[in-house]
Image 1 (tube, rainbow, N blue to C red):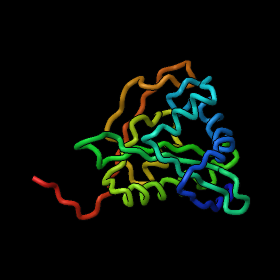
Image 2: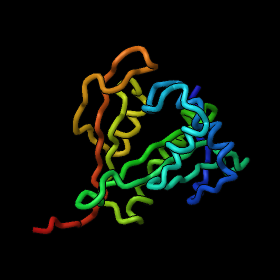
Image 3: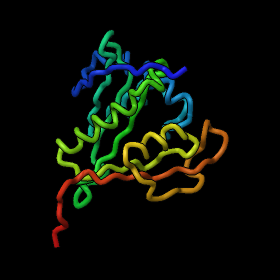
Length: 178
């Protein structure tokens, strides 16, 4: 049976009171060792420093019915200077909200957010190939695999697996300047 879709609302601004429920979403993702490069035993302070680093802006996904945080993403410049038109994002979905369309809704929102912030492209630098659902979701959203780094990720801290670099141009009618 196909799970029902979860209707979410996106909240633009993270507030310190959001940390406990956000940590409850991040902790299982970090502990799984399947998609984030953090140590699997990262402590709460380390996770907070990683996810809420000054260059990252966190947007929360809330269940429209209950108001519970069911996912989050951050958006940040991937590079500075002459590469500052490309952004990078990280996404996380609560275990009880997976396979309910939350990631798809967040990626659509993040692309609009990126455009509003003046970004013209989005790049994911470490999409673990063993995360088949993630790779398929990003491809469905229009991202291309532009490279694969062999053995770039220590999956569940036991085996080396490849990681894709995925990219999507977001700019419309933007001309290269010579």
